[in-house]
Image (cartoon, rainbow, N blue to C red; front, side, top):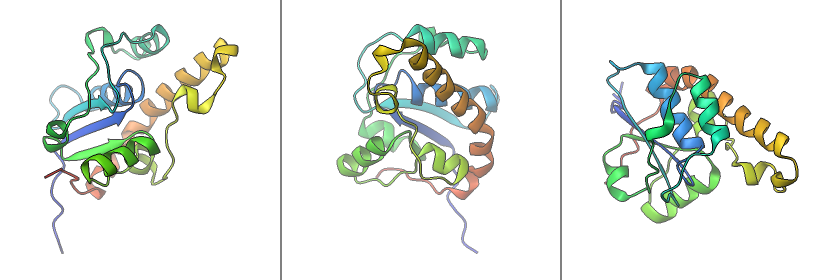
Length: 167
């Protein structure tokens, strides 16, 4: 029997680090609690200083999380190096990490449910989202809810994933 390296730190990656990866970071931290042995972080492949949209922050606040202090972080080689398991929220993020850093990483839904399906950003799911703000709001809230509800499964499946640490 071979021992898998133990995952002690997790990094979620999306585009801007103000929606999907941030929600995953906060959902996992909330699920694990303050005494958790895991370090949980998030970053974006195109992160820039930006405020969190009120739809996102309000949904997180309703779940007991105040994201007002969140500062979007750009994905760097150093961030990849200091985390054991890197989890991409979408296919483009996984492809970017592989091309730019030579690292193969799983998708969020793959770790949580064994499904190789991405969590789409708003513009990917609803290209003309500006035409129907109610539909856009419902989609964003459903993504946050999906991430929140998936986290317990993700935690139970963590032992099945080896470290993906960058060298």
